[in-house]
Image (tube, rainbow, N blue to C red; front, side, top):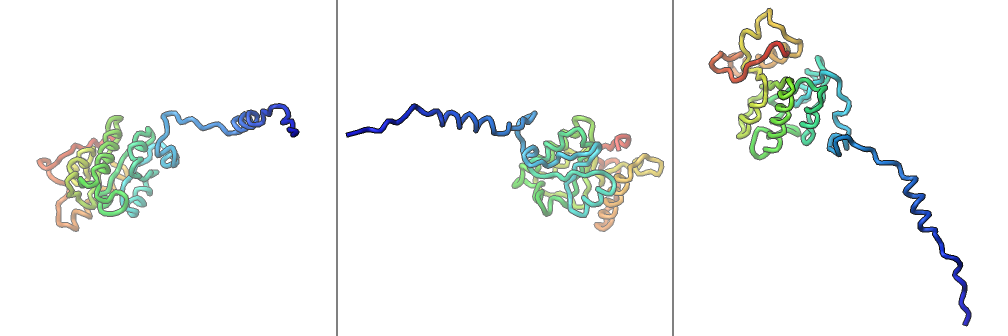
Length: 206
């Protein structure tokens, strides 16, 4: 019985493995590790002085008339807020009634409430502004927690800040007008008096 000679040992597998590894493109390094924002690319194109905004589509368009806007996305809000190019964080009350932030003022969506709170804290920590525009008043069990993160609530603006000589940006003026119109439709007086004011607004930062 004859047997065939198998020939010399092959190093084919070793060569293919080496070639395969060498031809694979290098994996991009992310400075601070992977994140949802890095993976999706959301919030990567941010202009200096941009506004991080949570609100209805109509409200977003209004803000865009004055400033560059980055829309807040659940799961990425704090990552975007930590970008030093973001100077202002604005939340509209109607955002809690529909869309991705629905129920963010309630314990059932506590994770959303905490995300909004932390985003505001990040802005405040570096001297930025966080504004709440009450086109709807949050009434959920987490509303106090959410509202506590804002440096200004536009339904509690001191009268001196609304005087004709006070320095106001065009965006600030339009948001105050929007708030006043909303309060008027409810038969409310705006702004509130000093005894009811919860937050002091720093006009020089606007």
